[in-house]
Length: 245
Length: 204
Image 1 (cartoon, chains in turn purple, red):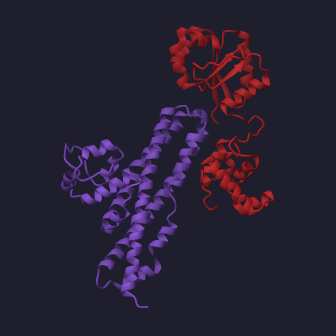
Image 2: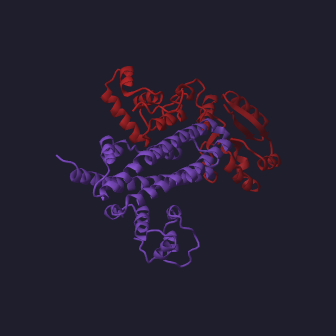
Image 3: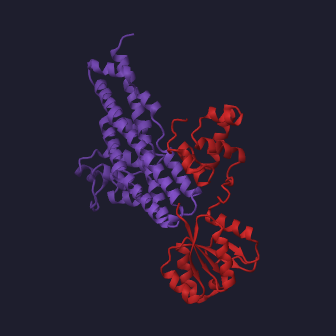
């Protein structure tokens, strides 16, 4: 079901409670009574069309509004992506770390295996941090510079220098698949780890890993299907309009 | 390494002593408690933190102990002791069965399989998911060797190594080198100390 601006915000959460994390990123807090999506967005000064596209893309993999999303300003998209980064590092990763730590504590029969999991996730955490850091330091500023040049009549020379050293396709090529290790970790726990003593803890951990994976997938879809094509078009247009030969 | 802890619930003095001597032969195990009757059993289940409990089926058949056994099965792995090889024990969650008529070697093998400490001779079994050859390749991947190095070591072409890798990944559902390394360690294809550090991402 597609979420529209006249649906009650409360029903959006009832439909799929994972949307809570999306709301959170837009700074929307609970307690909205029977207000519609549009009214709540207005209250929080959020672009309701953008919110709808993001939340629909999040809930429904098949609904992926590439075209619609590409119409929004780059800054709106990168701000959203930036907030997903914060969500991973400040919330999800610490939660998972704590659960793994609890498993190490509770499972002395296979402590070695649990320590391995801990090490694995720790490495993953570093990898994820590098990944998001690079996006924030290099990719997002680049996309904003490109958009600025695209909208200007006479772009600054610096943007051409920038474009000589970097392009969105470089990002696309070096954009490694950050979900793979998470997928492996899940499979190791589900299929190969000797039965842990505390299965409730183990289920909680899996729940969190699935949750993080889903969110990362959504994050990558937005980057690869929205941000990259949008910037590539702009790059082409800039080159066509402002360079000779 | 932390020891795997055992308790024995058995009325017969002779059988208890027999089990004690069997468990003694398995490395890294520790017998924590011997329970001789129902009263002791009830007292024991109230405060137990034991990995495996070997328990005579007469305890399981006792209605008065039903709740205590259920509670026990949530915290510890239950291994049932029985004299009848056709017994099944579907009503209780258990990790395995020991038959009184089995030879020492079979009982040893059984307990080792259940507890996963299958390392008595330093040998390890090949996990059922993959072939012997694939296990060899996997072992080398986990040790951090590149495709080329593995090919040279095993006298096969790099192309063959790549094919094996694809098959391993497909069969196991594990794509990354660190993931495969953990699998290899859990299945005792390699020892954790052999890996040095668990981040051989450089070998892609």
